[in-house]
Image 1: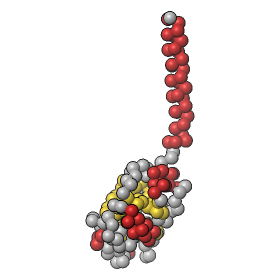
Image 2: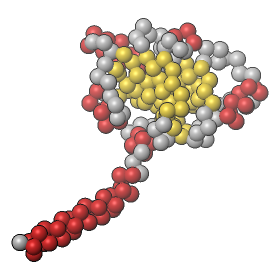
Image 3: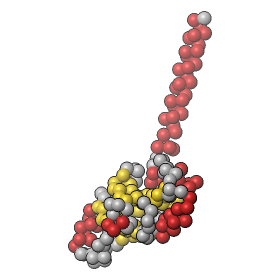
Image 4: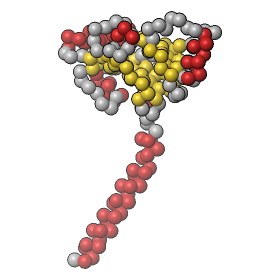
Length: 184
């Protein structure tokens, strides 16, 4: 009986060792698949991409079925980002994330200027250049200076029932994500 117990204990330790080694060997494959890497293969830089309901579960970890989603990726080393959307009566929110998926800034239609989606994301240096150039066409824009290189914006639009599907789809398809370059 003692030998049998020793044998089971040894086999348990060997199995635990195999599982731990397998997990350590899988870390490079799964550990580098952050939010930026995941979205890089599915979206283009400076192009707003509305997500279909069947895609959101794999792109966004916590999906609310009462919202429609769209994503825009950006690279602030290349240029700033200007994100604009049409007027809508639906509740919307926009969240800016860094490449690791941490929230940098968030706003919604109630905290934006005139309830419009008009967001400008710049590095602190680009923000300084913009103030020096005295750009006046940004009166209704919410300007965010973020000390990040790459990131993405997720726009969510509230959809209380299926009758709002077309309205939300139009809002997301007309949302514009473009490079913002300061003309000196």
